[in-house]
Structure formats: C-alpha cells, structure tokens
Image (cartoon, rainbow, N blue to C red; front, side, top):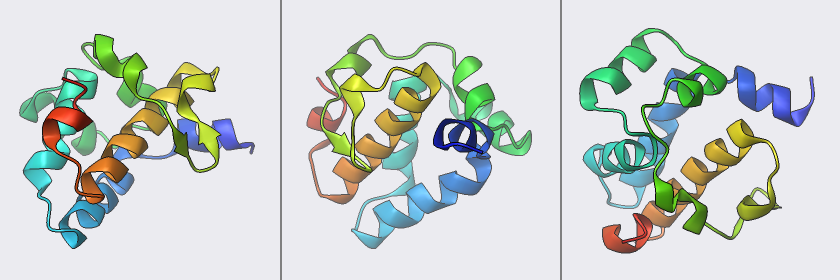
Length: 117
C-alpha cells in the first residue's frame, strides 16, 4: 500500500483522539480541535459524530464533508516533509490541511490565524 492509499484508508475516528491529545498536551482544548474541523469541512457537531460512529475513513470523511472552506487554499507550509499547497491528490491534501491546522493549534497560534481570518 502506498502513502496515498494509507491516508485514504485511515479511519478518522482512530486519528481524531490523537488530534485532541496533541492539542490538550499543549494546553488547547477538544472544542478548539472541533472548531478547526468544522471550519475546514463544514461538519456540525452531529455530523462529525456520525462520521466517528460510522468509522469513516479519510476518503469518505472528506467526500461527505458539506463544504471544504474556500480559504483552505491559504493553508501553506510543510507537513510530514510535504508542501501542502503542492499536494496533487485532493484527499491527501485535505488530510494534510487538517494535520497542519492541528499542528498550528498545538504550537499556540491564535485561532483567527489558524482559521485564516
């Protein structure tokens, strides 16, 4: 399985607690992680919970997202050695956008900056 296939098949519900854990270790909250996810994907608390309950993989998670935020293209920089703005595959890019935003949260960035306001 290549890198791209691994990301497609990763179950969001398994990664989500890791996002929360990473944020909380740095004094941030699950509510802030959720706010980032809602901003990026257009999910609501209910629809996010459905994705978690359904054990959706990242491919499904992003395919079913109500709306990827129009400012998502403003997310730039390196994550896992890749420039997020140069990733060709949509699902991989959107997954890396989310990774990048959670990283910024853990690094103490202000929410307005993270949400590209």
